[in-house]
Image 1 (spheres, rainbow, N blue to C red):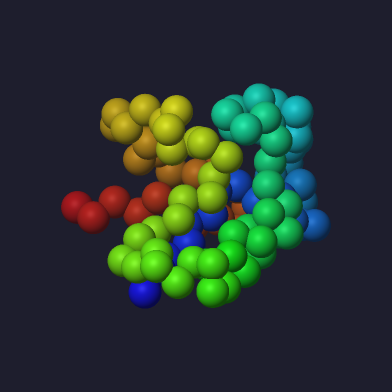
Image 2 (cartoon, one colour):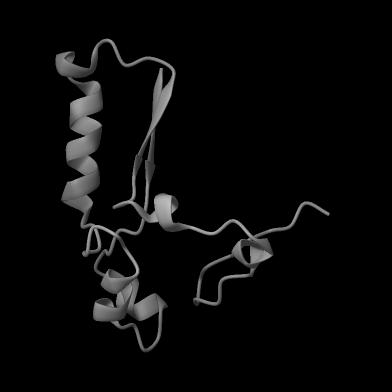
Length: 93
């Protein structure tokens, strides 16, 4: 069994959910230098479903352009998201 953990993926309604969305600023926050589109994640899923990935077992493929490699895991990562339609971070306590 293998999991796929995608990072930011800009879909058609993304700018509608995030008012004043700045794609250039978003891309600068991702080490790869660009925001993924659905095909980027689909290609990773196709690879994992292929015979080429047959020996990859018990792993999660993080397809986020390197974002988790840059992420600081201080208390700030628990801040509630503010986009319309987004439930944000839900604390456990």
